[in-house]
Amino acid sequence: MSKTTNQKAWIFVIPVIVLVAFNALIPLMTVVNYSVQETFGSNVFFWEGVKWFEQVLNSSRFHESFLRQIFFTGTILAIEIPLGIAVALSMPKKGPWVSVCLVLMALPLLIPWNVVGAMWNIFALPDIGLLGRMINGMGIDYNFTQQPVAAWMTTIAMDVWHWTSLVVLLAYAGLCSIPDAYYQAAKIDGASAWAVFRHIQLPKMKRVLTIAILLRFMDSFMIYTEPFVLTGGGPGNTTTFLSIDLVKIALGQFDLGPAAAMSLIYFFIVLLVCWVFYTLMMRDEAE
Amino acid sequence: MMDLTWMAWTWPTVAFFLFILTCLIAMGLWEKQSPGGNPRRGVFGLDTTRGDRLFISILGSIFIFLGWLWAFSTPLWGALVIAIVWWIFVFKRV
Image 1 (cartoon, chains in turn red, orange):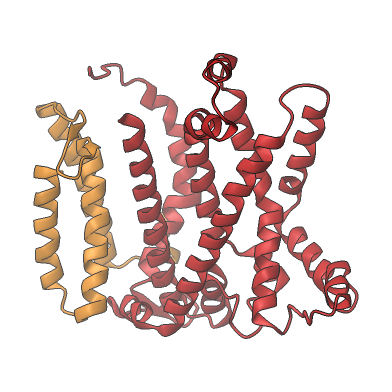
Image 2 (image 1 turned 180 degrees about the vertical axis):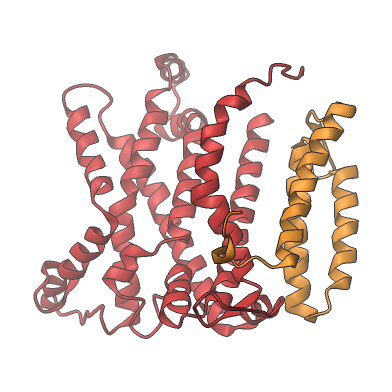
């Protein structure tokens, strides 16, 4: 493997670096500064050292919202990825229906997050919402504003509705890039549909699926708007995910120090998981 | 002079970012002096460049410090020792 000697390309990266500095690096540095201090506003700060980090690491509140977050992300990944692949497999490969399907699939992705939350909130209301009325009409007691299980089901259904399309579109792009020769060879060998899926389609989709899982992991791990609009983190604290908890601490209680420490820990966890996941997938790729 | 009081700088956090900056510059100088940053296969079976190893070292030491803080609270000298050992291990073996 030879090393590239022409490093001039770096000059073209400078605008991006400046942009990232202003929208990410400088705010992040400020968060680091906040995380070791206490403030009561008016730009007056008191040094606290690592106290906030210790407090967050030992707080049961953080542990609980962290576990809720893991459970939520795990659940939606377990539903959206297989479902997305299944939908992509059943979509037509050519003909006029291709564009119809693609547009239909893209629709949920175009709706702003707070609108999705508001839509599902009204849709699922037990007294006036279509879904809520229907479930209650079938004799099942359902009220997502009071029952934790119902709140969870609604939040997960909403996320699946909103984001499965992304997985579908990525998986479909992966499927379309498989040359016909593979299928012809499989046909000659008399391969079953499962064998075709297992040995041709799945390996060929691996790269896009990696991206799909990474995107869905990061987005759902940092989810805020949709559950905030839908349930507001309730009933009680049952759907309070990490970001909702973080905003409650930072803006509700104005505890900027602990909130900064928590957001840093949150950031490092996301960074670690993404790195591990990406590295594992790329290692398999190399082999 | 730009007014940076809104960023609430403290000397320890300045030192922290200067350390990161120094690491990056040092990596650049190292590569210039003795090129050899191409990927190699380490003990975890990963192909890492020098830059990857710096990233793994920093990310690892963050979790070493957080873990120590969670388990033993302050002072953090023990975590510092483990972190230094971790850096040496990563740069030599991973």
